[in-house]
Length: 241
Image 1 (cartoon, rainbow, N blue to C red):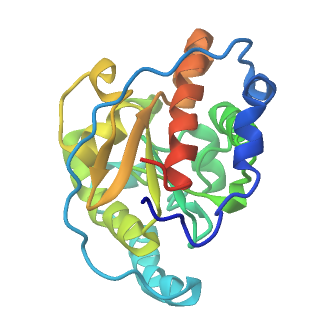
Image 2 (cartoon, one colour):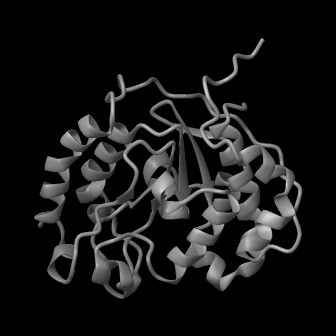
């Protein structure tokens, strides 16, 4: 018999799922598509025990954040206004990884505060979650010029910071927002059509891939696909296989 989780991490999730159409409408979806079957991926071995509490996690992340704030390991440091390290709860069960900061994020030093961030907030509302419930960060911590894609050497320069964030927070689920994040964590060149709808894992943590909110701003019809992915994330948070 499948063991139930010790507690419901998000007690309103079941009710939210039952009212899926109403929730989805919160970020512009008018109709709930059916979810396609996923392809399980073998889980990787765990990297070790999770820090006991948020205080211990903060102690571990503090020097890493300080190093990132002073980082000059790649060319992106030359034009940045702020390093955008990450934001949210260190006890988050759901961790989002995006691509890189945009203009608004560079100006404020906080990830996902522009138009794409506002859409992400609506998605979280539909999931009955708040920004304070999750943790969000990017593959690179400084804004690429003209919001271009990060170069491989820039991603490599920032990898240690991102890896430390994920290992320290050790969420229950990781969600990659867009192909750049998925390609970085999964070390693949597969297209989004192959990455979405399947279950993956990073260091033993279930990982799902969905479209970046910026993509939804240009392609609003893809909101239905994202809602399918968020339903899967909520199921994983509840411990469902």
